[in-house]
Image 1 (cartoon, helix red, strand yellow):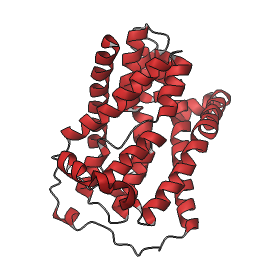
Image 2 (cartoon, rainbow, N blue to C red; image 1 turned 45 degrees about the vertical axis):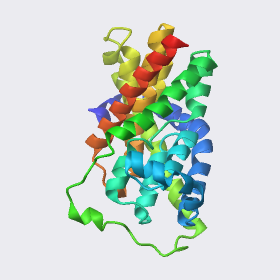
Image 3 (cartoon, rainbow, N blue to C red; image 1 turned 45 degrees about the horizontal axis):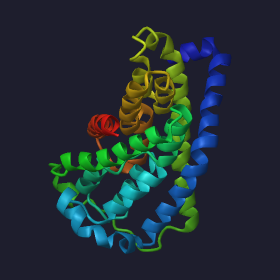
Image 4 (cartoon, rainbow, N blue to C red; image 1 turned 120 degrees about the vertical axis):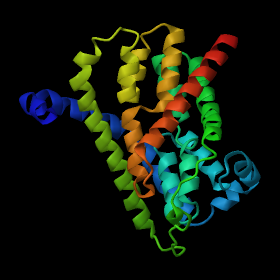
Length: 293
């Protein structure tokens, strides 16, 4: 059906696809690619322990994961989607964490960044850096609380205990790291482009919903579109809607992360449930902070 619609109205959807490519080129690529390369380099050079050693006991006690999880958490907050998922997968592939630990880390190491939350959603869309700050605080705290829910995950698969991939130090050249990072960022661009087309196709159906639910419906599919639509609602409802969407990430962002987690073979349903609970926790925190500040 999608192919038929594309064929009938090719000119319209080529323009929409170009909008998606443009959004990726000017907003995602410049900030995502450097982080992808540098974080992959840090992992391959075995220097992560320098940054994470002070957090080893905290991470193990609270989340039952190694200290390196703290570094992934902070980098995911700084860089945004889907860097956290990519770094978690890289740690697993390098034999530094087990699959069981990787699944736990995904519950709190898949986050949006301050550039999008405070800059784009807060200052640009909501005309309030204060709202952006509220959204950011609830998002990062929500991730930490969300991780506590999944700290007891156990995979019933004996192979997983021996699933760490052993790699020789220095095996991957800088060129390999750059190539791997470019491929990852290209896959993100392809998904963004596709979802720009899909959301345009189903917009007539979504527009039949009550006006207050349209931003939520569009955001569940594609995060940025939903936040743009939500900015037209009343300030409180808009803030709560954006809070859920940012932490949930939308189907487009979830698929971007799943592309990074391919070798980890994490079930789509589990990652989606983790993002839903993150969204709900962040929304509750946002309501509390909003009402008391």
